[in-house]
Length: 259
Image 1 (tube, one colour):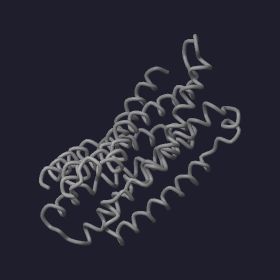
Image 2 (cartoon, rainbow, N blue to C red; image 1 turned 135 degrees about the horizontal axis):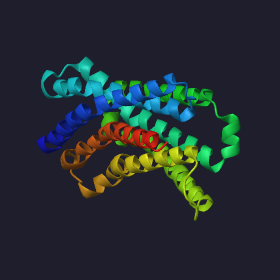
Image 3 (spheres, rainbow, N blue to C red; image 1 turned 45 degrees about the vertical axis):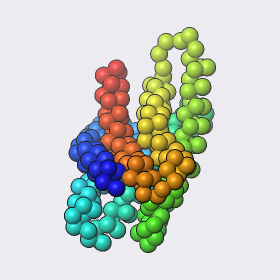
């Protein structure tokens, strides 16, 4: 199984090196933005929480890889299994929350303006943390679940929400701004969030789900399936923890320069 493990360890280490400073930069940008007195939106709350999850996960990757390859300490492996759920559970659920918030802002703007409050974001983020910690604890107790379709269970829940919300936002923007120039800043921000989530969905979320559903049909031998599909595909969720903060930083700086 050296091929799959080589791909997984190499790219996991690379995304950790790239993603950690990117996540730290996102948190710093958000801190500076709100220090200037900007209103804290539910989407800001979701972005802060998803970035914290990504940073915790990426910071532990080097230690987890060394343990997997050389040390083989069981307590470190248990922590690694636990923290992987920040990436496999918390990240897709928070992405779905961000897309739903953008859906309300664009498709139901009157309702959103009257009910927009960071309290909603805080409560949703707290619920996601509770689900993530619970699933991570189960992953420690039953280690076999980490190498089964159970690992992708939250993806199956989050993906329909992401796709439906994204499609609704794009359709609404297309209808309401056909033939016009320029977008309201709130809708422009929502469009940026939707674009980011679409990129992450296609690159990060869909491939693991497809592999875990159809992979056994391609390789009937369990070792071949693990080596060439199941283990290497775990790189894609890790890639999301580096791609999302980079996209967010690019959008934030582009948005600020356009004001």
